[in-house]
Amino acid sequence: MTTFGLLIFPDVEELDFVGPWEVFTASSMLNGIEGRPADTVITIAEHFDPVRCAKGLRVLPDHTIDDHPDLDLLLVPGGQGTRSEQHNQRLLSWISSVSANCTWVTSVCTGALLLYAAGPGQGKRMATHWGFADTLAEHDDIEVVNDFRWVRDGNVVSSQGVSAGIDMALWLVGQIESPTQARAVQRWIQYEPAPPYQAEV
Amino acid sequence: MTTFGLLIFPDVEELDFVGPWEVFTASSMLNGIEGRPADTVITIAEHFDPVRCAKGLRVLPDHTIDDHPDLDLLLVPGGQGTRSEQHNQRLLSWISSVSANCTWVTSVCTGALLLYAAGPGQGKRMATHWGFADTLAEHDDIEVVNDFRWVRDGNVVSSQGVSAGIDMALWLVGQIESPTQARAVQRWIQYEPAPPYQAEV
Image (cartoon, rainbow over all chains, first blue to last red; front, side, top):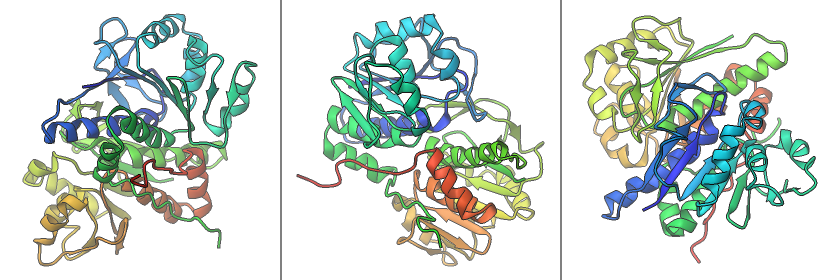
């Protein structure tokens, strides 16, 4: 049984955390159906106030950074809000201290900027949204990886922008549970992508 | 400028509506950046109470079915909650009357069951989650399409399970705006999928 904590904050990008949320909770559901212990998947925010996401969706957090269960995996999403949160020392201190006890420390999109500012991302190879690769690369101790959808360096796993978190989360389920379980999740969420308009005609 | 209304209800599947939400709001954002009118993208529920989704995420609806702007597009997601909502005559009546004035009437996953029960899906070719294709096919006037990720029949567009809503939403942006715009959204949400564990080794 795994406890997944998904950080949310004002102007967090919706799909950055809901994509992995769907993957982790579907894995937990499948565990339950098959008689294995279910997992715990929770959102965590600085306060209990409704979180208004970057595109306007309003979400109620399950826990605050002051009171939550021990986490096995921390996921830090991105979004417009990272621009201010990367200067929020209270939040960065929480990310730093929680990360020290997590098996996996992960980010999606510009969540990489928060993982860097908080410490766990420093000195790592990391991925981020293509529009912020140059910003992240301004840190001399970071190697920004542009050619892969997600990157693992030690126990820090970072993905490219927005929808890349879905692929990363499936990979993490494969590491935490099994590749068979990850494939079952993929099948359940019917993740057989077929983006339209792939040719300009 | 387009008004997109995304229905939410208790036990709605999270990614069913947040995937299209991200696509539609990203399109609106890109319109704004490029000087075109932004769109309106809203969640609509039966009541203003927080909606607890199928996997536990709690969302505050923007509008209720009693008071919302005129919609150009209605999206009906799926999830465990469709089992009871397909008998909720008040909600079905709303879907029916709103659909009559929409340019596009769409569903994701088992949202197809609600579109059928409400009327707009009757007599149509439709897609749904693989686990509910047989249930939908019990209606003699439905042709369930299993081989395509989303299906258009007139102005009714239905997609397969959960993540398929992302592909369908991108296609809809291509129809409503342009294929160029849909590609820009795809690039912005970095939707270049790379599911892991595609081979069993």
